Image 1 (cartoon, rainbow, N blue to C red):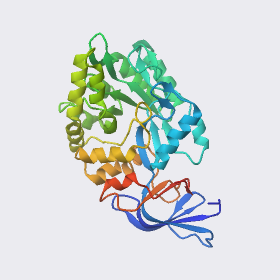
Image 2 (tube, rainbow, N blue to C red; image 1 turned 90 degrees about the vertical axis):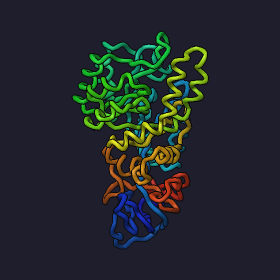
Image 3 (tube, one colour; image 1 turned 135 degrees about the horizontal axis):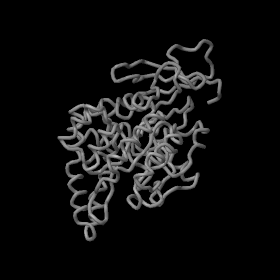
Image 4 (cartoon, rainbow, N blue to C red; image 1 turned 180 degrees about the vertical axis):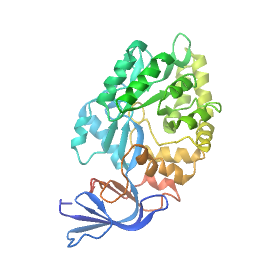
Length: 363
């Protein structure tokens, strides 16, 4: 499509869960709801249109071994794009992916800088590995490097204890989170177990990744503080395999991981029912493949979240949470078109008919 071409999207345009319109126009890469005068070279796309999907926990530029070359990062981003993910919150990457911002054909990325972990308490080559007295300085550094987010590793296996334990003392996380907020960044943390949650939430954290350790006594604290969770259920599905691999060396950790897996759906449903904000994230890029956004939405529905709410967690609600526009007048035309109504059956997300990014049909 040339710069002067016009795209006409017709059928059902889901501006919001209940705000459904018959058509929109794309002019100069942006959304309009009135037919442009003198429109020529018009291309029409028909179906059910949604705002470009959000993967709020994704890692572009990372694989199981650490940073990857630019051509691999490009393939990761293209895989997400072709699945309908047009906005990524990159929840920690050791690679510099700023070059992606110059590509109109690749998803938009909101970066959290590089993971910040405790020394020898995370996956090798992923994170800055530091001690608590360095935490404020590293949070400030990553707040300046990122796009309004910082990512901590809140817990991980402690080999001496043989189980998951908190990585940071309260006296370290409280000033670190305050410093991020002073610099205009929000803070999120990887947390599998319960041990680190109270200190992080009471210290002002904005989001918890995975949140498998969320318990009934902690849920009211999350609600009171407005702390969101990104459950990454497609990643939690790997816990039994991980537990099997660590059984002989760390039996307590293995049993713990199995318990977290067994109650994963109950945990997410209890959080949602209580009013904890829940968003879609796949954790792609560590050990998981990219392009799993539809599978994660389906997992949220399996957990008991109503389909429209699970859809909002990757569409309208997720974009609002991240401060990015949806299908509003004048916004960049980032949208995905499907054959059926995704509100009625979220499984249609697995088969986009057309992907439109910055007003161009790219898939």
